[in-house]
Image (cartoon, rainbow, N blue to C red; front, top):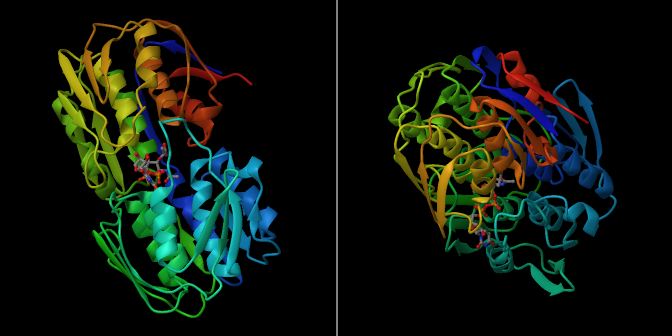
Length: 415
Ligand code: EPZ
């Protein structure tokens, strides 16, 4: 549980952790690369802990040195038990890596935050096109590549991040060439390609809509620095925005923040970007963020929608959100309403009428980013807010309470 006494006014500077959604596929990729991989700037979050448990179950040895995670890929098995698969969504990207390394894999359907059905049909249809035989039975996948993995042309009907990563991991050491049309373009895709290429891979066009992968014989582990977490960055920007604050973020990649700047500018914040730092100064009272529609990168990211909704909740005027990526990503709206927010959800649309002030209340986190949005709202609310099930937040934030407290918030995490 996280307890917040609001309202706060944030000031100071904070360093941003490594990206969760980059670290997870990178750890899966370490399974393919012979020898040792060292990932610098790895966030100490529970999803990474789960990924380490999966790696150790597979036989890989992992150890931490400060924020460096060292993986030695001596694999001894090629199946992931249900309890580990059920922990998080991204466990599915181990599929491509394990088949690439062992020629087979047995794992069950992944778990993860409930944002609506989380199908993996694009993962399965794409991997089958690479010659991997996948049999589904009892919620588990039995995968075999009897003749090895063969490069092919793959066109994704949706630029799925996970499906793009799975194909990259399956194809990087395949025979022949793979082309992924309508590939995801998120920065985490580019980070995975950079690491694989440094290990000896031949992946071209990552970050564009079309990725070409020339299969190579083998990869050798190397050192790699994980990119900063753009969603943690936007969470702290929203925290400054709702509290009339003035904070500076350090160790970020400003290019990754650009698709998320418009609501801050619309609502009257002043954002200055220079090198690896960003400063945001907020007005006493925000204007509305007006119109947010979530899209695949480089559109506005769905992961930022919840924390921007907390800004809209206290903005002057009405804001309209359209959630185009996930079918059920407004669970935080009901909890914000318990704090006095005026929000009307109709399917993929949410209409938010800003109010003067929110009131602290007992609320519950139902997923990672929705939980973060409740913390942001608690900073602006008058009185005490308690966020239960804060374990969801720990999946993606190393220490959200400690970070915000260092910026002046009256916030603490109870065991
Ligand atoms: C990744 O999830 C991220 N997770 C998500 O972040 C992020 O919200 C999402 O990409 C979109 O950017 C990780 O990287 C670990 P998708 P992923 O495949 O790969 C549908 C967070 O909070 N789809 O791009 O699961 C799917 O249902 C998390 O950090 C299919 O229909 O996202 C969704 O509607 C939440 N079939 C849409 O595509 C498939 O086979 C986007 O999914 C795969 C996906």
